Length: 351
Picture 1: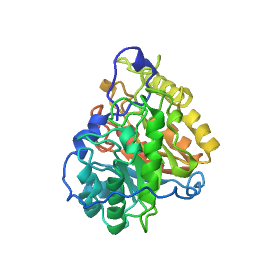
Picture 2: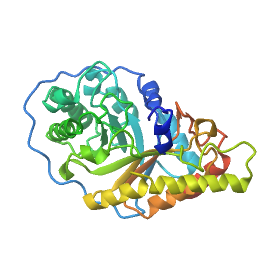
Picture 3: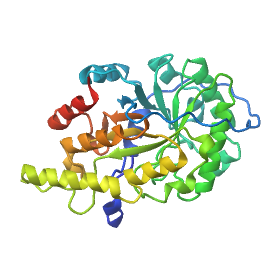
Picture 4: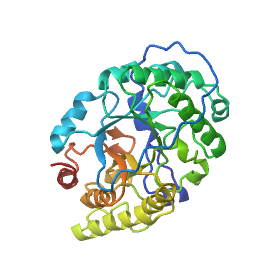
């Protein structure tokens, strides 16, 4: 998730996502390092998986690192099982990324997991060195661990939100190196016997630091195009909502924000067209409400309703509500601050 930025850049942002939320929640455990060896990358894998039918979207949640009980409680609250569970693997150490047994143990064999996977760790690395093979052993070991632990079909968000400026694998300075490193990771991980991973190329919504399509790795390396979408806007006539606004004035601003999310540069409709041209399904690995004091729409049932309808009429591989606390505040639907939106969510995503 991106850090909120000041000035003219902010007015172009619609759904910034806050890296601090993940950095604070993911740095929680240390897995046992794997023994790895370096070998040449294998040839590219075959064509990607098929496109799902519109409306047949797997639905789930992000609750935080290994928050198994919270995920189960969320499913009970909304009235439907979690079709996917989103989590993020360690962002600090290459050795922990190579052997994420804390994550695989807590979610269990066969869990419908979607993992955020770093391309540069806190302890160092670069896109160029990764593209040259410096971390082949790490990603091969990661693949072997996931296969051995019964998670061979996991979705992997490699270098998520790369078009922003907040993660160390940001691609604005060298999109070609990002695409090359991404391809290499897919090739290496897919070469492990038993691997059936599905790969998500995952920018965040909006123009951000550069046109994300410049870092497209190629159709053979992508199973879904992921977008992270939050109800935060700096477009004129949207947010902040003035104190004392009438219900009709609030709804008007909510509707204006939604129109902007769809029509902005690299907005929802732009990405829907791009995915159609690439013959790929979309995915929403993260989406959520944002409190008013963080330039969001607050208790915005319009956002829930409009986005759920938008998703229903497009082929999406999966969607996941970000039901956690982040640097943009409390996104949780059960926190009590979003009563109307929470009810609308249960109507749209429950039984």
